[in-house]
Length: 90
Image: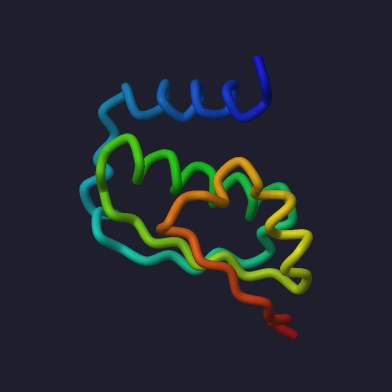
């Protein structure tokens, strides 16, 4: 089983807990530092939640290095609800 499959299964397990996620439906999230662990996992989690529940979640993935960001998030890059921007927040 690949990492992306393991992660997806973990996220789906969380969703089965019937958490109240309605408040993130039709929202847009700006996630910074998407080449790092927390940023990349946040993007993957939001992407999976949006896809599995048809929540229309938009994700703006921000990174200093656009090519690295697309490589790190290659497993979710085909999601039309994710857009990438190159920016340094300093």
